[in-house]
Length: 285
Image (cartoon, rainbow, N blue to C red; front, side):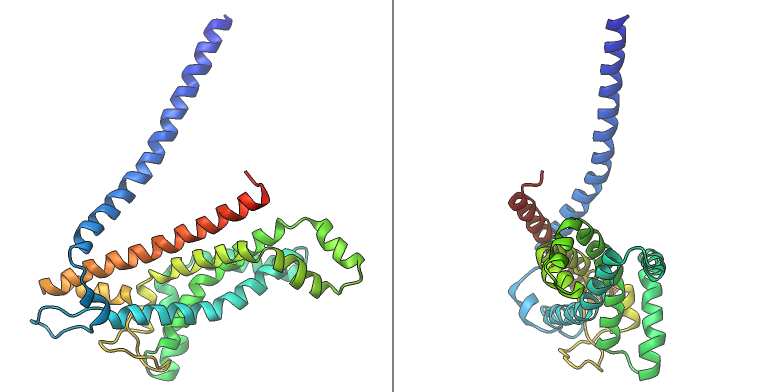
């Protein structure tokens, strides 16, 4: 009887192990197929001109996406400049004042925001910024990206700050420090590296968005740094070139997709590296 029970447990364990590995492979195989396909198509189309030249007119060979790369950097920095202070502040409030009525409503709002499709965010930014200003602009694009970043930054900030033991807060209060100083110089300062990880993940999530930028920043074939002017971005430039009938532009689209993929993967891997280093330093398994 005991032998049969042991065999049953082993068979059950093997079955669930196979199911787990099969599920993992079902996720990883498409991911590696996409990465491999984009690498093959994009790497072969890359050149130095891609990073240093502006687009060439239709029919001419060469050119690059220098304007789109710089535009993506500007839009992401602008979006982060708006989202990070607001997101971290909201995360602090949700963590430190979690029992308040406003905290519950704010948490519900953040959960709802995280489920809003990016194209809806683009339409919202279009109506709130583009229509009143009567022009597509980098400012509208930055606001759209900041809305995408916000729920990720808020939720990661909240969860990270919740991990700080209460006795650390109590020790700071016992020393006579005001609560805002305990939050700012004890709780927040001690978890700044973890917060940075969440911020990087939020930025990498927003950097690859296309739909919101189509309605806001729109695009530009030249380098533009004005906040009130349309600005090029890699996702929009890739989309524009990919749907064009010109083979040269399609090659440029694959090269842009490769660069964007490497950029986002690098940011995610960098965030994981920071998180691993923090865990090793703190002795967390």
